[in-house]
Image 1 (tube, rainbow, N blue to C red):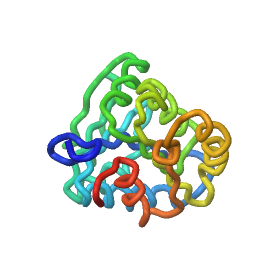
Image 2 (tube, helix red, strand yellow; image 1 turned 90 degrees about the horizontal axis):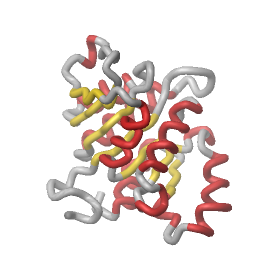
Image 3 (cartoon, rainbow, N blue to C red; image 1 turned 180 degrees about the vertical axis):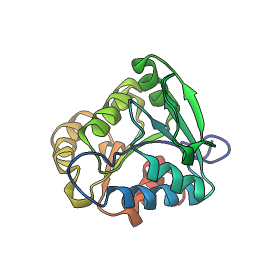
Amino acid sequence: MVGNLPADGRPLLAVFASDKGPGDAERASIMTQAGTLMARHGARIVCLVDGSMETIPLVTSARAAGGDVLILADEAFHAPPALAEVRVERIEDPEARVRRIGEMAQAFVGLPGSLASVAGLYRAWQRAGAGASRKPVILLNHHRAFESMRGFAADIISHSVSHADRIVTFTDNVDDLWNKIAWSLNVTA
């Protein structure tokens, strides 16, 4: 193990994002940049699909940069043609999918998106044991997307979880995202 990573030194990151719904029109661009960044640093990415595939820009950019991506989906999921080569693990029960991503991930990454993507991240983190598991959460707070969670982390988590600053970390730009991931996992960038 290197820091909190498996022997091959490649972290498995559960990434939650969405390009659906109202809000920041830059979300697809942010997912593209983040997917490329994580893949270039050797991270493996796992995405949860509940209903529709909302992380297509993330997955396609990570794959284009040589990244390893896994999609956790139900039996009815059909990958769009652009993702035909991406590995899919099918788990019919939604709760079992959430538990699986929580067990697999070394860290959880939240990109600006919908409330559904934030709820999915929280559910997976909780199923992984949340603070007890000490699996970090790194949130890209672009245009204050996670500002309320920053307040929650400062007011609640910091008083109940030791080293909370390593458990829930925020960054305001994509360029700093990998630095926060590496720092949270205690590995060299």
